Amino acid sequence: MASATFTEIISLLACRLEEVERFDGMLNDYVDDEGKKGNGYIYKTTNSFGDPILKEHPAVRLREKAIRHAHSLLAELGLTQSAAQKVGMAKQGKGKNEFEDI
Image (cartoon, rainbow, N blue to C red; front, side, top):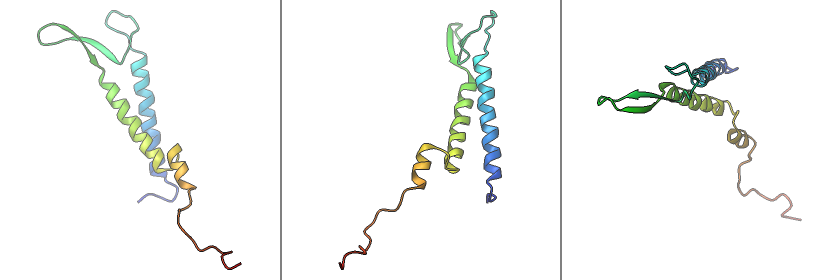
C-alpha cells in the first residue's frame, strides 16, 4: 500500500524519467565506427550471410518501455490530461427536482 504522500510512486517516476533522459542522451549522442555523428536509433551491422543490414538500437525499446511506465505512473497520480478531466466530473443521473412542486 502506498503512503499518504505517494512517496514510492513519485520516486519510481523520478527513476523512470531519469532512464528516459539517459536513453535519449545515448541515442542522440551516437557516433558511428567511422567517428561520424549519426542517428543513434538504428545502426549498421551484417547478417549471417555477410550482407549489410540496419537494426534498431536496443535502447530504443528500453526508452519506450520507460516512457510508457512513466505515463502510467503519472496517470495513477492524476497528472495526465485525461486523468485530470476525470477527477472533476460529476456523476450523471436523474435526481429529484427540488422545484417540482412549485
